Image (cartoon, rainbow over all chains, first blue to last red; front, side, top):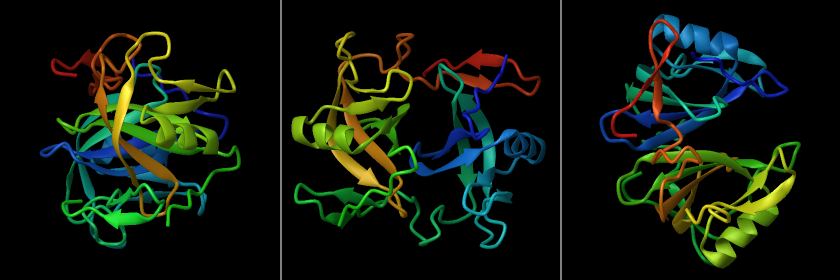
Length: 114
Length: 114
């Protein structure tokens, strides 16, 4: 059975992955309420640690994440949301939040396809 | 420049992804020391929150993760390690820690290819 192992703050880490391409899109946190809303509505909801509240990804931008499947890791403290994105996943309008790689000298370089 | 935004515990979240297939493998945490050792050695090191120490993934199993590239997300509080795994990434010997999906009734079902 699914029995998420929440941390001291009541959160698990959630990673959104494009279900079609397998690309890593973004990382955020979910509490019990965010998990329940996501399962109930079929759209990714998270818990904002900075704002201290539930938010639906795309609630202002329209770039929602339709959840196709939810996977859980071996110790049930992390979730993989397999999603169909309605637009760029990142607030910078990059397709993925992970759009830069770290170079040997510590500078960041933009990745062509991310 | 790469300036990781550590949380109150001095950690960032790190996601390991198979560089060849793009598959999500595992999720763990890194402190400044784990990031430095990973960049220095080319093998994924993490900070174990339960054991309170640095560990190299595969130090006992041999299932190390050779790091091809490190990506950072928009707000620099999460890392994507693009890796070449030397064996199953999960301690259960599944290729990925995310090998089960949550069904509508809350049960967990094994995923054929994960």
